[in-house]
Amino acid sequence: MKFNHVGIVGAGQLGRMMALAAYPLGLRCLFLDRSGDSPGAQVAPILLGALDDPARLAELAASSDVVTFDWENVAGSALAPLEKLTKIRPPRKALEISQDRLQEKALFSRLKIPVAAHAAIDTREDLLRAARKLGTPGILKTRRLGYDGKGQYVIERSNQLDDAWAQIGGPGLIYEQFQDFSREVSLIGARSAAGKIVHYPLSANTHAGGVLQYSIAPFIDASLERMARRYLNKVMETLDYVGVLTIEFFVVEGRLVANEMAPRVHNSGHWTIEGCVTSQFENHLRAIGDLPLGATRPLGHTAMVNFLGWMPDRERLLTIEGLAYHDYGKEPRPGRKLGHCTIVRATPADRTRALKALLKLMKEIPRPV
Ligand code: AMP
Image 1: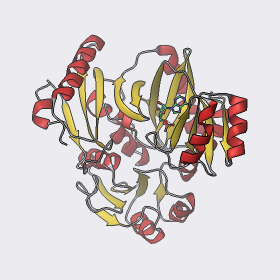
Image 2: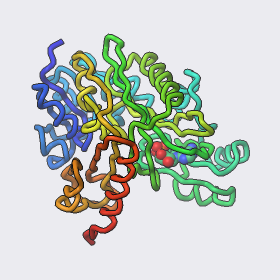
Image 3: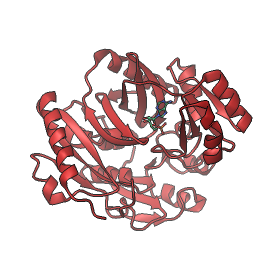
Image 4: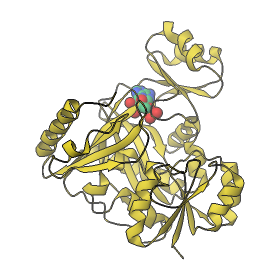
C-alpha cells in the first residue's frame, strides 16, 4: 500500500512518541486535537478540532494513507464514515469494545480468558445486589471513559456502598471483585494485516492510586508469558486486529486474570524505545502501514519511571549513566503524566540497583511548589 501519510486522532504523548518514531521511516504525521499546544502538535502539524468532529475526521482521513489513534474513545459512529475514505487501523470494532469495560470482559470471557467476577451496575439496587453476590472488597468503575484510576471507587466493606454510590453512582457502571494480585503485568504485541504477530517481553507494572508509577521489563516468567501471548493472539485474531494491542493482567495465584485491553501503544511499553530492537511506536507504524514488523528482542534489563505532576530536574537526572529523559511538553498539573525516563542495564540486579538509585535521586530533587 501507499504509506507516506499517517493521521493520528489525539495529540497526546502517545501520538508524539509515534510521530517521533515516524520521522526516520520517512513518514509524515498529521494530528487531530483540540489543543494547538498538545504534545503531538509540538512535533508535527495539527488539525484543530474535537476528536469526534465528523468534518475534521473526514479532513484527516482525506489526507492520510491510514488513520490511527493516540486516544481510543472516539465514538464508533464518528469513525464508520471514515472507513470509506481511508484505512482505519486498529479496526473500529477493537476500539468500540475497548471503550466499554463490560464488552471487553464479555470478549475475554468468550475467548476463555479469565476475568474478575463482575456485574453491570445501573442503579443503587444493582450495586447492593452485586455486592451481596460477589462480596467485598470490590471496585465500582465507570464502564466508559475511565482511565488511570479515574471514575473508580474501591469498596472495602459493605458499609461503604452508599458512599461509593454518592461519589460515582449512576447508570453505566461495573462492579468487579477485588483481585488480590501478587503483581500486575502487561503484554504488548503487534499484528500485521497479513496476520503476522510479534510480542514484546512481559512488563511488570507498579501502580499507585490507579496510575502507573514504574515498569520493569523483561519480567521473566516463561509460563505466564506463554499464557499472555496465547490470550493476546486470540484477541488479535478474533478482531482481525492491525497495529499494537496491549492487555493488562493481574497475576493471581500464579495465573493471569485480564483487567483491560488498550487498542494502541501503551505506557507500560515506553521502555521499548531504548530497551528493544524496535520500539512499540515503530512497530505500530510498521503494522498499520504494511511494512515488515521489527524485532522485539530486549537489549537488556530495563526500568521505566513515570513523571507524574512534576518534571524532576533534567540536569540532575542525566547524571545517571545512560538515562533517557522524555519530556512530553505538557503543563504540570497534580498527578498528570508529564514525562518518563528509562534506564537499561546488563543484568536484573544492575537494573534493580539503578532503579533504586533513580527513585532515591527523584526523592532528593526538590519539587516545584
Ligand atoms: P484500570 O483503570 O482498570 O486499569 O485500573 C487501574 C488500577 O486499579 C489497576 O492497574 C489496578 O492496580 C487497580 N485495579 C483495577 N481493578 C482492580 C480489581 N478488580 N482488583 C484489584 N485492583 C484493581
